[in-house]
Image 1 (cartoon, rainbow over the protein chains, first blue to last red):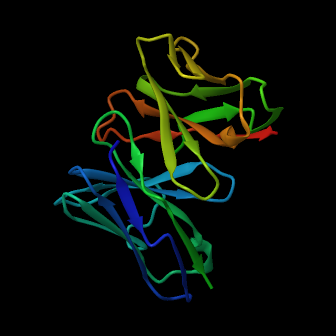
Image 2: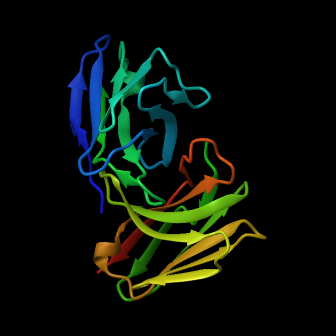
Length: 113
Length: 113
């Protein structure tokens, strides 16, 4: 199957700093990628749809200025958590769908201290 | 936003027993998919069932879909300890502009050896 690679797998940052998470499709081109957030023992909540060459589409309640998404190429989307605070600590997962099936990155565990 | 609710939230069984998880969703769909997530990892696609299908099999997995009740079930037969994971249903809402996947609340399955 297709491969989606996400980096880093975990990151610890200080409150007030920004963190960038990368999501790459390794063997296919992805005009669209999806970013999810997952709290412990909960489901995945769709945050935004990343569109190559255009603005991301954010779900209701997600702060655009807090979670900056850039999809500059057909194989790379980035999520930047700006001015991170402890409440932003979570597990972030990206995915892409070359067909019906979705392929997921390994996830990034963000801890803001 | 979440499309589906799953029950039970948690299920504990002995190795060799069957595990059944149920998913209910809210809107019309193109297809429904089941995913598995090992703790702290990304998701892996298990099986897809289209809206015009009623039942589908893949190895030890059996999925049913009842569009009139907006519900689906996942049966894992002859469970193994390695099946321990969280299981999520996911739907693509019919007519959705971005083809995004919306996940259910998930079932945490524990298979005791």
